[in-house]
Length: 356
Image 1: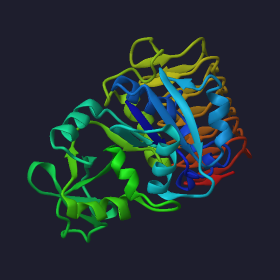
Image 2 (image 1 turned 180 degrees about the vertical axis):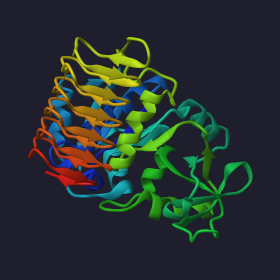
Image 3 (image 1 turned 180 degrees about the horizontal axis):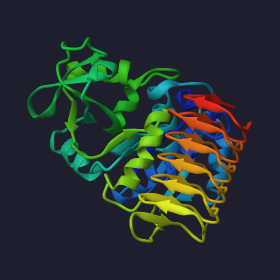
């Protein structure tokens, strides 16, 4: 089976991290988002995928010089201009030469949904398009799907007022499509969620299926951090990274880190990372080659590869970008986000800061 993976967005909600790195190339527990997405596709029978690129495409081309990742053969379709979701699907699927049922996924969604079961559901109903759904507590900020018999889509309701929503099921960003859907997508910019799918409802061949499986859109600092803590906390019931070694008490390592300080599980320490004597890491990810100096503390946070947390600094509920430096004695809290390569002066107290 073939897949289109949408990775063209600028990741504005994740700035400043995405100023230097495309969203899908950011690591979640030391494995990039795009590799996690491709791993899921490969496990569900996808053998070929086209990456629909727009923002910083060279980062993807450089990362996969053999045009292969997670057992999936890759090709690339670089959007000539912003095309929105339908435009990108049409452009990329035509480039891939799709001639049979195919899958579309959003490249910033991590999920444990059974894609094979979704394809079976699609084929059993003779659907032209099938949408994966996930349940949320408050659907008022999303596009909600109203379902009829056998999962046929009756209507799409965009951001309904609280209390008026027809269901709490939202579009999960995974679709199974027939090639005929491409005939419905005009050249240029268009939205599959707001234009193409709603226009197909009258034909009665759009279906949707809800899954209770794990699902998260990692496109904001809150969800990007949560996705990593979910892996550490065992919510997904898998090791936080495929090659991670369980050192006991919830502490995982990759490669050969040097740990002379205290690491309290659940935590993941990346290859060649250093936790100095007197430093403390708790419920956090310390990326490859990152350093936590003496007296520093990192709690419920992510320190990306190559970053430095200097002596006596405190990082709590925050994200430190690749090769960033947190100055001596500085305190980060309340989801502060430090962009890649940024130097933060010492002896500061930053609450909910965004620095680049």
